[in-house]
Length: 370
Image (cartoon, rainbow, N blue to C red; front, side, top):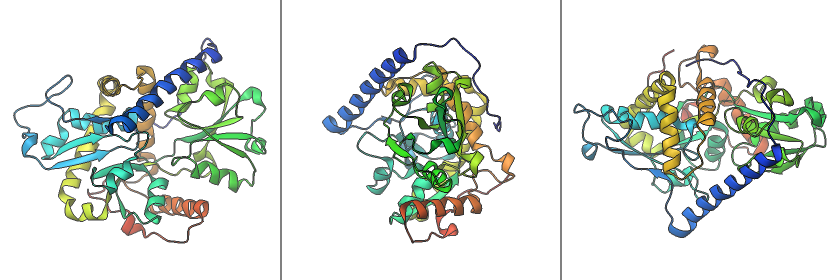
């Protein structure tokens, strides 16, 4: 699906923001406790084991037995949610198996990120933001981008209209919340370009600080935290929106990455993985109800709070971010100009001098077609 209109929520009855914030705080605390307990007590990571012919599966006799197929382990860069729906659908529907590969999906924990899985050999493939992957590349990790799924930035600032922060110039001296795990480079680059001085406030996995006016502005993802604010009782017309893409920072995000060694040794299997993953995203786009049901089920199985309305919103907006047609480029292409902008951003933000070669960094494993 390639729809890029920014569909805004309509007016709604205003809920009590403080009650919603309390509920989010409780949920966030339970989520954090779960993650920490998982990683500290038993070392068990959130993961989806190989599916049998269970609920929602459509395996048939023509699909090879997974016991006889080469295994690839894929690690998304966050916990189960609709941001990774295409991978889940490809697994559940047997698209990977029909290509002749077996795929296991494991997720990071509170203490172990997916790049660590890649480095220690626990995963063969990982997803990552483009800027984050470049930062890892410059640090010495020999990453290869084999498919650029996202083509548009979903990062934005939001402020409350009653805060008086209506324009970027109003950010001067204000407190701005930001996640410090791959999200900070682009918004910080925008503020730096505008020659503004702000007080950056690290935030965790909730929007509570913004709800309770602990900060003046919050960095959010259009497909995720923005909608959490709406579900917490803040209407669209009560917020000011500052999309990074509207200020010249339309840097794409989610891509598929492997180590150079894996690229060289398992090129054929990686081609099958990307082809089947795209089939999964196509199916997800055409069967949204099924896909959201699948995502919610996987979240519940991982003991993660799941909201069907929120996952539906996320799926729609992630599909928009994947749209390549309005850029007039082949699907999964990392455009050289996007590469250069992201590279310059990383070098300036982290004060690094090491350069990265485009052809070494982006090596597609499928034929790039419109």
